[in-house]
Length: 299
Image 1: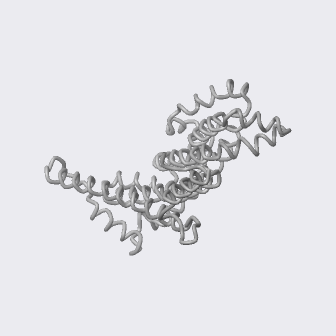
Image 2 (image 1 turned 180 degrees about the vertical axis):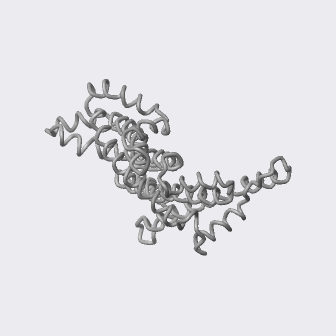
Image 3 (image 1 turned 90 degrees about the vertical axis):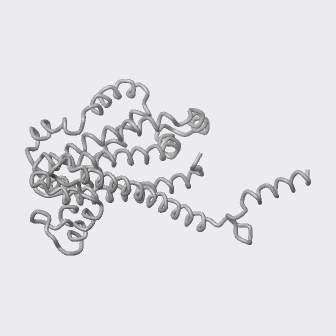
């Protein structure tokens, strides 16, 4: 037994080698630093690939002379973006910060409503089997409706302006969140629920202490997908509902004026904000949840 224990101890030490301090404790901070460095490195590598493809395509397109219009290059785009950010150049009567602020404000309002609605409805559908069988049909139907297909309803209810944009974002992202949350609740192993019932737990206790913690990763993933959908729909909605300010509205103006460099600068800002929300805010929250549950990544 001692020999087996000694062999097991040596095996554990080898697996932990490099992740422990001299005192034998796991260096959690070092592991987190490596994770952050790895995440940052993957983002930089991905952006480098995108910029390379973009630059090569622009070089090829402009070199062929197939169009009288010039395809913006990365250098031209980021030079214009620098003027918007640091030199105070106006973007159709407003600073780029005003456009970003207006878009983010609409996003936060709509996504907060969608997240609250989707989590509650998805939890109810996932917890009650009979309600799930009936309720998922209309939810699935609503989810099939493309974002801009909600435009006539939005204009009918709210007219042109911010309210219509918020409604379209809410309608799209809330259904996405509802479906994923309901699926996450239903994927919790039934043995955990039975064990909780045998321990004397009631319905609300089972839901709050068993189902929600076990489905928390699925809920975070639902929020990530919902946020991605909300951000894309926001830009499209701003282009058509006459918000008067915002990144999508700015892109619509650049198209009308054939200012494609300005359009690409706005698109670059959209990509950076979306990437930051997903890979920094929501991904960090997801990692914290996974760590709390003792789950491992990378399988």
